[in-house]
Length: 504
Image 1 (tube, rainbow, N blue to C red):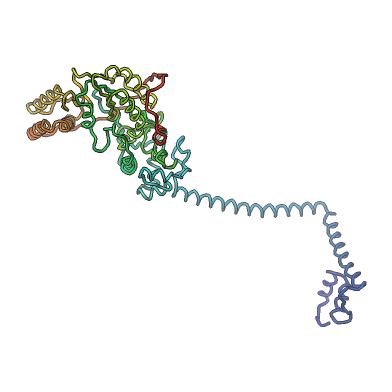
Image 2 (cartoon, helix red, strand yellow; image 1 turned 180 degrees about the vertical axis):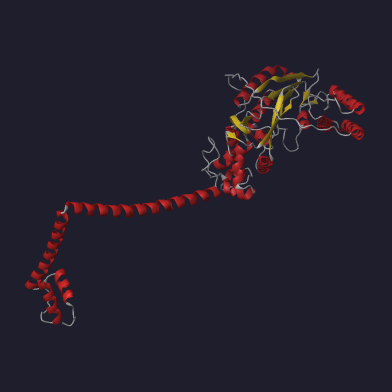
């Protein structure tokens, strides 16, 4: 044979098919068997024999395998174990890749987004779509996301999250909290933001809040307005009504502030961050195991001391001002507001409308979620001294004469006896109070203020400035105020559908 096969190779070929099949293949190869397109009957029989022989061998192998049950079970278990091991390895690799992808995604997400800022305030942080058209309408800066805001504003994402994070219990606080005495008695709680938070709030004030118009009746914390411009509009009126809003800043909640930024057109994500940065909760200091903790009580609100709070309060009170202005015009009164001081004035012929005005003013204020201070509603007539934001407005703008005499006496006593044991009202720092009052007089009567300034310079040259002591922070005092609701309908001008502030 030309192939020169060994005896073993010939045997293997015969075993793989059959003897007749091997002989037939060799005869065809050597030319002793003529090949045709259609196999002859002997060829078909030989091929069928090969197939049957293979099937028989497979059946015999299975019979031998299954004949020994223990061997079969061992084989089955071994096969299953191999399959399970291979499957576990594949699953392990898939899970490892998933964990890696998830960790990479989480790391990337943390670098590009803020997805959690505390309990009860993190809902909606995934909503990053802002209303760009509305933002452009108000000439406000637009941001695609908090990451875009971070890049454009210069505040890093870790810092933004740190300043905005809402913790019910923490060992740090972003505010210096202290109290100062009020002129009317009691104490005013001041929350002065620390530098990083103050810069953030200042950025929001300058780039967002200051671009929103607050209306002509507002004279507090707005450009080219002051207590003087507020008082001028009530000069020489026969009737002046002063009303104070109680807890003005604390009555403006986190939800209202968030709604404000949302109405500007900002996404829920940005509105949440801005509102958290601009609000604060009542905080108590607790000492436990020589560690100081700051515990938040109640809802967040506008802090008194933040640079952004006055502008936010003015914008939120826009609807209140609009309704009160419409009511005042309808009844023949002039209306202005300086922070939480509301002033109405009219001539004598409108005296019969005072009760009606007060009735509906109370309803409107309650409806706008504010409260009138029960001890600070005053009606002043022309035959008595009339004051608006501390300025006398009977005939001309002036400072209260009685208080001026007391101030002159104070300066005289200081010049003669020095700073020791001298007081001015309830001020803790006398020198600051004296300089502040001179600045106040300067706004109304610059000539008198100049005399006082020269007197103060003489005193400082003679006695120097007093030593300013550092006052210890006083624990927060929480007051509960009962509000009486009025059921009747309010008298107010109709709202325009285009007003974006109708939510407040």
